Image (cartoon, rainbow, N blue to C red; front, top):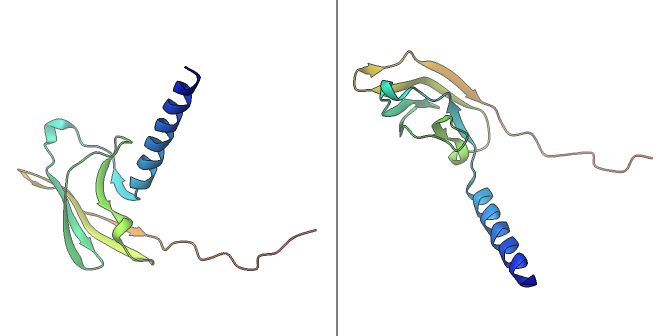
Length: 110
């Protein structure tokens, strides 16, 4: 019986680690009401058109774009729009900032 708790703990830890490994940074927005029937988001990233299906992140926010696939550096999203059967929303723009630079000047302080 004593080992049962250890097994459940190990299983729980494996599930938590697996969930963390799948986590990626996403560009998100507030979710749309169901009656608006959003089907996808469209826009351009660095001048290239994209379209992503409407889906919800575990936080409850709508996923606009998975930014994990972007290279390091600053990226410009332009003309971001939500789309439904009646058309597109008013466009907005968004800038993905570059990652922080590597640490430098490492040492010990007295």
